[in-house]
Image (cartoon, rainbow, N blue to C red; front, side, top):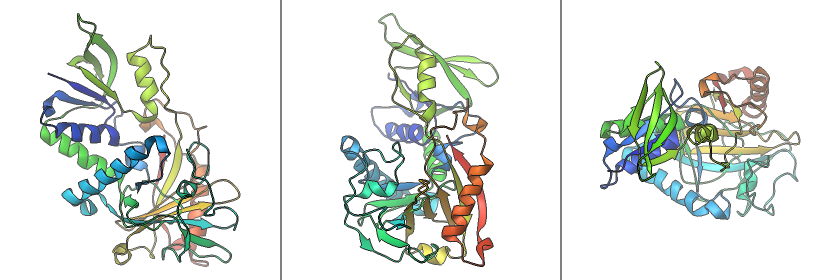
Length: 359
């Protein structure tokens, strides 16, 4: 019988275990989720923005992006995702303070995140149209707002740990990575998927045929346990190369996985309430001359997520819970939130719900 070990119990690990456990050829008890962090969903799976798009991808992964978007919608329709993890329609928009920053003739960004460009550029193939934007966005003199998404192409999930500045029109959802991750994990364990937490995978063993046979786990109390393993998936986010190097120290393969950390804020505004949510969420992507390119997402539950471009210079900690928030970056985000979400003369009406750092 196949035994699958998944290193990393974040949203990728949990979603993989969820769909694998639905297969009639797989027994849920033969699936093992291994998570080293003492706190579950302590990085991107709990603190990301939760923005979904169906077609903001380079050609090599475009079919995968479209399939993922489709599965998100199907999952939300089946399990009342709006109530359980804040899945909602979202409208994508670019907010421009300079008339020449974003335009419809922009080439699609092959990798907007890695190249430090605004996420708005990833939607460059769409035809732009003027729009007024969400009620919670402060419209300052000289700024322009353009819709950059088509109907049924973007969505939002309630995450409680992220935000963006771009507005894009669409009739699909947004989500909360934290609540969605927890939902998927609960579904998995209810089916019989085994969770090893906190525990590290420290070595692998082979059988007499030279095939993968088991993975050795080290628990937080120092106990070592061997679990059967015929299929291995490393889904540890930025920690994937480290996990791979630990299990296969002699390997010459270099995994193309790198870190891009980023800070975020979640705030509440009197201009984003349950009365506004029926009209759908918004994702606002802004480009500025300083290169910060703030991003803001409104989410179900009365919260707005604010973030900027990620930074490859933030060191990767041993565990997600070891990450330390930079007070300077938080101040920068608060200034952005005040400028883009506050009302002149009453900027203190924004309530900061939480500060976060995704490694």
